[in-house]
Length: 200
Image (spheres, one colour):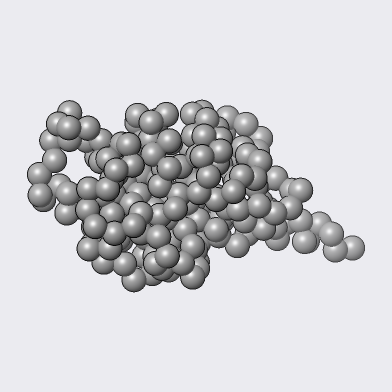
């Protein structure tokens, strides 16, 4: 079991700040949307470092990141993302996951609001099925969304949230951020393909 010390906590919090800035800079979120988290283990149980609610991911600092335990109880000051319940539910179902990124990237979210699905392409792990899995719309921040996302991600590393966005998991928060970026890139490629195929 990983035992937390001050340096490790700082590194984990720093990684959440860095990956938050990364997904913003890459155009995967805008405004105050999206959330990023990382999990680590201590003698007293899991701790999750998560981005705060109602703050842009563009310019967070380490003091903005909120720590909660596996029950969602606050360990530091601040208010965690409204999607903290979804992050915690996913971590409970996926013991090998230590990072999560949830974005509203334009192309992938466009697919989420349409009747089109995103085909899996080579470039990020084995292709186990033809399309990325999606789940029906549930109100953001709701228990229903948390449960549905966690259940679907038992066998997936990224899913589409209908009429909402994308969520991806990884062994690290950097891997999760890379995966949401990859999902956006394949969505962009497929959007262009649909447009070109419609031209006569």
